[in-house]
Image 1: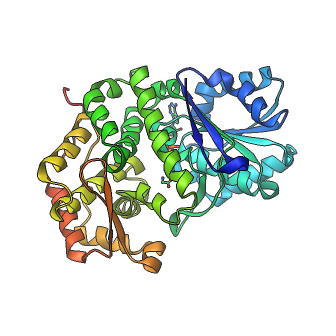
Image 2 (image 1 turned 135 degrees about the vertical axis):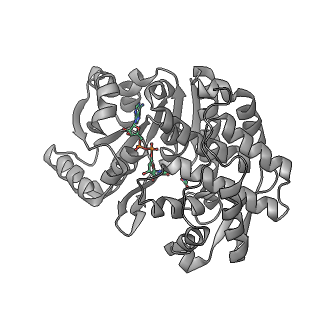
Length: 374
Ligand code: NAD
Ligand code: GLY
């Protein structure tokens, strides 16, 4: 079992506990941090069928009262209506200031449950039990909560840190292949801009990771969480440094929006955005062609598709400018500086972005690859 501490001062620091097959410890760990709280566990039917009994048994075994609230499965349900339903349920079962909301699921469940906890009775404690790779390496740590609005993804939300994150990497065994690979997009992101040792580990262990070998998965999740926790500890509310975690995301959000959040998965869009930002970096001399090839090769080895959907480059670029933050503060693109470093490009020339998008569409490896040796 590994542990990372997210250091946010005396009151709000929390532990991220990572291990394979540790879900049964949820009850004891909840009691350790919160005593005897009333619990509302939020999940979706798919995840609850797989892991609900184990989580609930552990909590009840520790003498805790557990209410269960399920939301439908899917990004389209990360909305205000579901938030209202969760708040109704919290009130109906009588959650109090001392109660705890537990999120059991991927990033969708985590974001909605976290938001519910952040506003119910002006904020109660919540615990993240992430069950997708993306949620384990990214969304469960750092306290961003949100729901979508028809005018934009994650448009309404709060910062509300969890009191504990319990990562059972064995839950990834049941994850659909496409979901696992989508999460790998975020994993590679950390390696490219923040940790060349992680990048090298991924190159070396790509096959083990794809086969979801327990030790490899646990090590990779641990390293990603460690990186994310260090960034969050320095810049909790994204005043500056934390924006580097958006590497690839400005391109990705535009692509996701063009596909109405249905045609392409977030993690895959991030991988494509990462390719575009890396091509921009190569064109600006921040990485060389060999480093760009290594990045593409790693995605390829991990079976992450870099196929750019068929939207015109100009439309993808215009979508990037539509973001509210971009309108207020100008376009900022995070690019790699070598492998394991980053730079921020402020207001890049439009042609340079459009060129990078075009090149990504035509890139020799920009076609669908499955695993390296299938
Ligand atoms: P998701 O939550 O939709 O999960 C993907 C699918 O996997 C779902 O069908 C889910 O039911 C299923 N699933 C979950 N765990 C499973 C398991 N162990 N076995 C089998 N199936 C399982 O998607 P996601 O990729 O986890 O999260 C995406 C969301 O995360 C987006 O809404 C995104 O905006 C958000 N996000 C938030 C942050 C943050 O910092 N808060 C960061 C990145 C992404
Ligand atoms: N996923 C980016 C962040 O948490 O800041």
